[in-house]
Image (cartoon, rainbow, N blue to C red; front, side):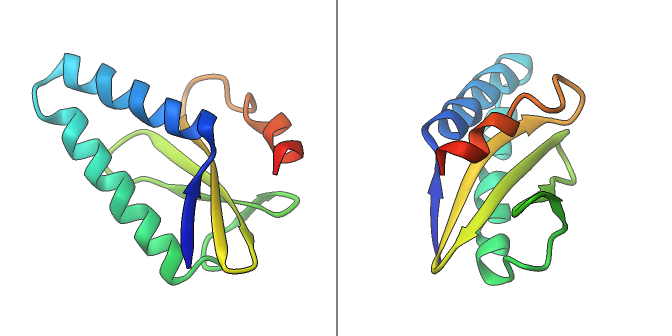
Length: 99
């Protein structure tokens, strides 16, 4: 399956990498690698992860306090949010209309 990041999710990923890298050298790089691995895992079994809202599914990351929220559209996975688990929990909900 093809993986596509929404522009906002891509921005969130970059912002998180930058912030984590500022906290500790190499941490942002590890986070980006973990997100890439998570996206590949989602692509292998997209329906494995729980539905959170309508057709939006969530993948909770293990080493970082982030969640990937995504929808499956045919042969494409659209990652709509790379969200911190403890900040503004539902800010991404309006993005479901952008798909």
